[in-house]
Image 1 (tube, rainbow, N blue to C red):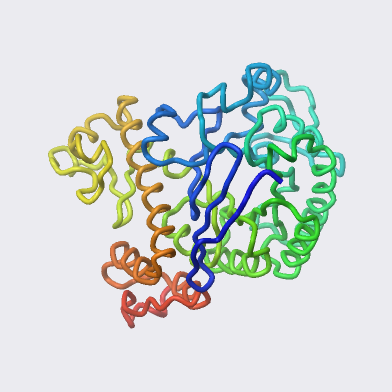
Image 2 (cartoon, one colour):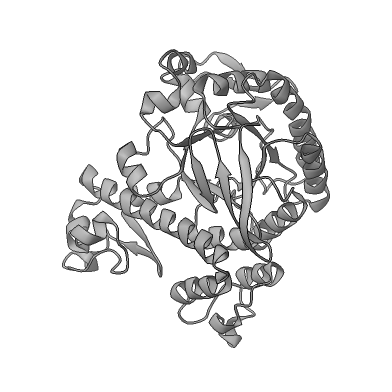
Length: 398
């Protein structure tokens, strides 16, 4: 095991911890931006350090296609290749196979897919996924799992979950760098509590360095989403990091952190930036909107980032979607917002003022008190009283 996880403070289920990885000492809860091809589009690694980014996520599938894991290995690993001194996490490649490619076929052997280069059938096995990730050299590597959308029902969910458990053993056996890279298992099981429980128990028995909750953020309703997170965080070990995959909406991160999760990743903050949308405490600001054309205020007057200090909404409105600079500035701001949110979650838990932080966050986002019912339900389970920011007549709405 190449990590240390130390819980520094708690509030009921929420926890703030120090996660020591080979390349960086991280503070959780934390958000990881997605750098598909070894880059966060439009931002330099120095800028990412400046805004407090701790871990970047790289996509194994994309990196294996270009520039290839062999070349990355030859050039000293992904950290050196992309000039990133802090921590990296790579996914297994399975999700991209299933979501991006036509005719991906999952069997016991692995995932068969058509090569996007020449159309020939190719096979990604658990062993090969780990070999590729060993060459790339990230601090955290993910097991290949059998991915199914949460919106699918029936026997396929159970089949995928049991195959994920069988594949974890193949991943463990193939992992050649356990003292430098941490292999995380992924909890599957759809929205079925019995299957999720079976998967958690199976993975915990393997005593892995950390655990991810997979198969969410794929179109399921929010009430189902938080219940799966709550169930998994209850049964996963206290002394290991818990990573909810694919979660990037600020509200979801606050709720999951209240339920005891530690790590998140998503393309949302940077992708939404490229469409001209900025993240602010009140929700979002759409910079493409006509009303922005002569607005001389910053994106967010309360934000201390370089963009909010130096540029107006009118200027960014002029740039968005027409000039690369627009999406670069918005990506910078949005990731700054996410890093600030992560730091605020961490410090509020340590300082014993987490409920106050949650209430303030919700009051800004829902000034009329119309906090969604699923958030109210989740906070009740998390033991956080948010009655002060919920209007009584809204409490029945979803």
